[in-house]
Length: 264
Length: 198
Image 1 (tube, each protein chain N blue to C red):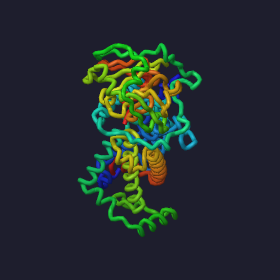
Image 2 (tube, rainbow over the protein chains, first blue to last red):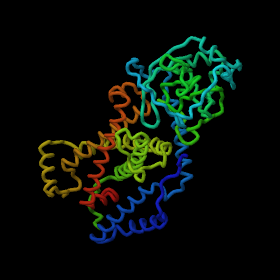
Image 3 (tube, each protein chain N blue to C red):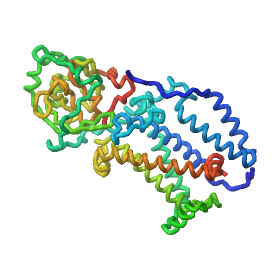
């Protein structure tokens, strides 16, 4: 489904490089017309090298280097993240209607979760590992907020989510708040994970409602983690299990190359 | 060759020019692939002209090359200011001289007689591209970290406006690069100056 390889053109990288080096060597002592000729050709060589992207270097090592930079960017973003800074909120009149559906599958494949048998699992570095029924979560104090959902694909939309502030849920289950990660496993086989400071951000909500109504299946029934400080793919829907850990859990898209921190 | 001719561009400038050129090519080509994911202006950029293969790959290139562009750009400004080159090469500016030079250029009579000296069109063009690059970096910062840089986001006119600012600043930079390359093709020794310094 995902194309990871870089575009390639059928040219012999070594031969091109050799020719270029040779011509550069000649350039310092050639006459005027030859020099122009060299310039014209070297421009073309440069153009070819740019078009092919990376035929002169090994693709696997480029991927590895880029992934390493991406992990370094995670650290920079964690360092930049100020947990007291809030994402902008909007009046209800600015809600995008209809709010777009988005997942790694089509809208006709949305998973239906049965409310009566549903129990949320909480595992890992938490004191209280009992399972939660939806009614128990609805009984906790709720907040709602109108925020902008920003998708990595280059669009954004404003929506209204309501539910339990995730920080108060984590405290309620006695999570180790010094742990590094909170991971999520979902009924649609999606999975992702976030950093603890974002989990405790005041706008991070275990959302049970959308626009005042119980979360409809297409927006992630029975619950979605809504974080206006993160890109859409970091906001898991249909959450079945939450775990607190110090072992990097990755994620569905993150494992394929999306940046793990993925937030603002 | 005449090795006695004076240095037109010092080594630090030439290095930064080529580092910048590589960073810009990577950023523009990966940016086109990122743009294609939604193509909010209604047209897609041909895939062959993009870098990264898919959105995730393009984003990795983009978020790696941005550090190169930013660090190199800051060093460039620092060196230019510290050595006095900025003042010497780009100032004073004159609108009248700009019009004269533009007309001369259109008549094909604009001379690059003294490579040490930038004509008014060059001064304005290079100052403009510095400004444009700054706009690209700042609007990119808003797209990347809109919550942390809230003031910058509002100055850009909000998140979605910042996206458009970023795109059009890229388009302007691409237009500059096209003209820049055309001028180099017309006056090829400027390329040698930028490679060898003289």
